[in-house]
Image (tube, rainbow, N blue to C red):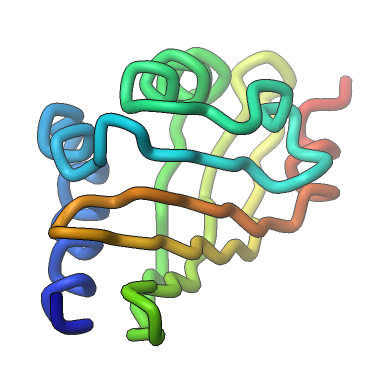
Length: 135
């Protein structure tokens, strides 16, 4: 698959995530996707998450439960070799329990095969996330 097609798939996923369209987000994933949260991120406790259901329950549901809002901002997509797409972005969010807002720099490395995401690796400023979780 050409890189620009891969970039379009990832762009569609981010747009679907922004509107809460989880069926589209999850439908873009290979049934055996391997998803890894950044080391030292509190959600890395489930790494690797295998399959869309594990990601839905272990990552997305927790994001919703733990935040008053969680938005992705300034998303820029970069075509990479080997069917990969790099996204640079920011998390604009507010922790529900502590009422602390944060704006954290992040990068997502997506790997695709046959039009589906087969792997995801998150890189993020985990200190900002941890500070927002601390009372």
